[in-house]
Length: 470
Image (cartoon, rainbow, N blue to C red; front, side, top):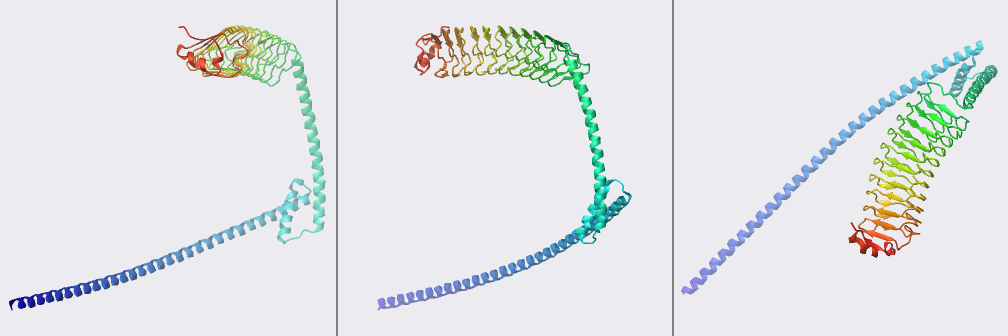
């Protein structure tokens, strides 16, 4: 009996719990439903508020746009009105101008005065013809055309007479000047007037002068000033001269000496070219620039001193100076141009200062009596044909910094018996660099580099490579 009661009681408790859980579930579902409704209502309210806000913003934008368009129309209207007013004013001014021009032209036609004002009438007539406001009668046209023809013919005749008279006077003056200049230039010792500041282009070119004194007023000797004055023996250049121009004394083959004053700062290209009688020249310290080929083919030149003020020797400067025996290159020089001493066949020795970093092509080519050469320690390359045909060269010392020796650099140096190369790495050489040289000559290289030279494709052709004995 007791067990039955406990069972009934337990079922009752379970039923109560289920009922409680059911009520709790329904309550939660109701709360969730109410929460969903609340959120949906809030979303609807938010969407509604957003729509209202967007509609309000759109309305305000439309209002602003409308106001801007109105202002633009107002401004545009004002601008158009101002432009129309300006055009009307300009048109009225033009009409007024041409009315005045017409009156002026009529007055000139009536008086028969200068034809230079006839154009007033033509302009006025053209304007009114285009405007369709006035037609000028044929009789007036005929009068105008006849008057214009007559006056223009008279003016043309007068101008032609004036031009012929001016031309006649100019020709007479030119003939007189040419006569005076020719008479002066034909003299063996012409006189350059005091006050002359420059001897101009070809002033005495090709003349038979023998000597000339340049006054102290001259500052510049111009281009070809004494070109081909083959009889010129002496010339005095004053201290006022600062520059000697391009080809100034080209071909003055009788000129034996020239003293360049300390005032000169530049000597132009070809300045003394083919002055074959020139035996010596001293270039002062004031000179900073010597142009290319300045002393080319000065075959009588035996010595030259280059001042410390010069930093470069240009290409062909002393080319063809076949009697040049000695030249001193100062430490100021940093570069020597191509062919600078080409065919200086009497040159026996040359020392290139250590400041020189580059030598141009063919610089000492065909210096057939050159025996001794001292190269710059800072030289990095020996260019094409540098010592080609230097048949008297016996020994050459290649500095440590040289990395390349170019084509035909020592071509046909047939008397070369010793090469001393101080470069630790074998310099790059061309297959024709040492053409015409006996490959059994002594080649001295750094002791640590002997094998590198022997194994090099082109240096290895020399069969007698040895270490330098310090």
